[in-house]
Image (cartoon, rainbow over all chains, first blue to last red):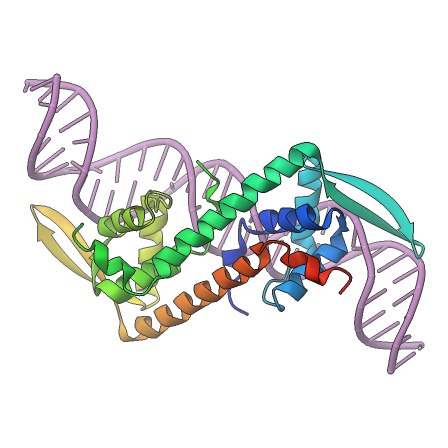
Amino acid sequence: MASNDLLKGTLKPIILKLLSERGRMYGYEITQSVKLISKGKIELTFGALYPILHKLEQDGIVKTESEVINNRNRIYYSLTEKGTSTAKEKIAELEEFVNTIRILLKPNYGLDYVHA
Amino acid sequence: MASNDLLKGTLKPIILKLLSERGRMYGYEITQSVKLISKGKIELTFGALYPILHKLEQDGIVKTESEVINNRNRIYYSLTEKGTSTAKEKIAELEEFVNTIRILLKPNYGLDYVHA
DNA sequence: AAATATATATAAGTAATTTATATATACAAA
DNA sequence: TTTGTATATATAAATTACTTATATATATTT
């Protein structure tokens, strides 16, 4: 598959975006949503997901509620008050970043700057 | 400044994009162009740039010509034939990636997939 | 009975960066 | 005149986000 190096740094804001819209989600649900929305192009692996979620909780950006559903433990994550503003920042940052990349990718855009 | 984690994996295709349009460029020129075109938002550091260029040369994607200008050595990089097709692939990959990210960032997009 | 889906977790390894450092010329400002 | 800035390339060490591998356990489907 295509290199996933491109993903680096984008996973956290993507998770925050989902949480900010859905209110609360559990880990497995997040991976499935990302896969579905991205049409399989982005695979958020468990090895990446859980450390990110734990870090977000540790930093007070998300809080958790544990529920037992079908005899299985399920941990719901949702944004804290602090997390809501953090999420806005991180999402805006990613938006600005993709816009910048699009400028750089614009056909022949670089030519306007030759010898500038 | 905003986290540069987002950059990971994007620098190589950005360099290839510039080379594919400008024909040939030297390292310092590449960093300045990226800074200029991105309005200072993307700083391609020398520590990142030169290892990438050396790797691209090693892999036969770019070739070099050395010239002495104003008593200073200047190394021009340009795409090889093989590099031209590699560049196309890498640029297309980055384009697809930013499009996918934009879908994920679309307001309320995630909501269409709840319980899907 | 075996495979797949659901559900969370962590440890080890990889690799693309950042940061720091080195070298050297040209030019402008103080 | 010397201090700083711009030009120009280079590499080594440190960081860190991720991948890969592994572990555990239940529910459902074949």
